[in-house]
Image 1 (tube, one colour):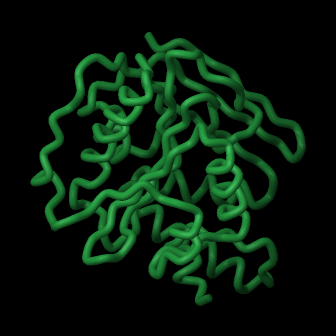
Image 2 (cartoon, helix red, strand yellow; image 1 turned 30 degrees about the vertical axis):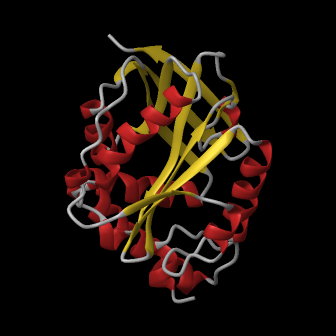
Length: 234
């Protein structure tokens, strides 16, 4: 697969020669600029470079929302005709325009086997444009050091991805509310969401849905040593 497609589809190859790695980092940087804007795109690019040499520092927003009434979902919020479908493993494996890595497919398969995860996809013109998840039992984020169990009345919204061709259509805002409705359907009273500090588009969508910041999670890694520290939001 060409490096441009690898970068756009969030596939992280394990082995690249030095020249290919430089190109990959550059393309990932361009993709980060498109998603996060100039300032935060620069921050993400520098963090990507440092991550390649074993140094990481990330700040995550730990947000929550009390689930009371269902949202009235307005299909006109998404600017093109669409269909929402609960996804199976085969839907991920056979997606035509989003190519998931073997590691991602293995993770998705494990989640779906547990029956406490549910995934949803937005299809536009029959093409999978957006994928997202809810967890009814486990707290999970990209850094495994923080993983654990949710409170019984909590649900987690996680791992959303919109193909670059379909960004800016209002999909994420719509699906933020859709997932809250799904958590309510499964008896949850509170929804939890984790967001990168630089990911302003996701923050905007979640804050519109009523999420509020509870705390910040600061993650540090130097080679094999890693630590995560929580700070209350003031």
